[in-house]
Image 1 (cartoon, rainbow, N blue to C red):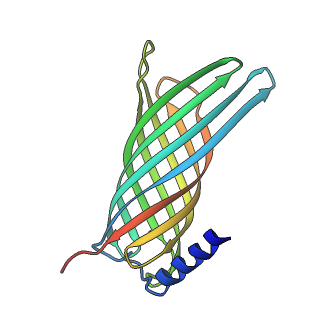
Image 2: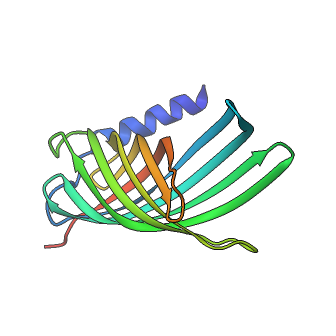
Length: 186
């Protein structure tokens, strides 16, 4: 209960001073974490589980009011458990992103959408390195604590295809992150 009261007090202190910097010629720097899990069973497919944890960053520039584009580095950690065999891997991705905020810049909470493409490399010891293409889209909201810092909650869809594979991995992802809006010095 004490944690909830403390969170409420901190939010109300920052809430009165919130005014976002989602206008032209400002910078966006931030990151997010997401988690997903997959369970295959039945229909001739051996039962297996996959757990994925993803850390992503972003560095962007507001070309227009409420519209930002930039680069997004991503690290993914995967663990696949198939019976008694567990295989872990890490993937490094980098690519462009575009983000749009729908509500006016003076709103304390703003709705956003983002689309991105990342090229990925999954190094593997003893096996060939895997290369992938990942296209994702997400929607969510960002709540601004003040004019420079916001916390975002997102949900999205990702479609990843390995270059030498015929199928794709489609995933629904939920994430949380922080964004720092840096105002251009005049």
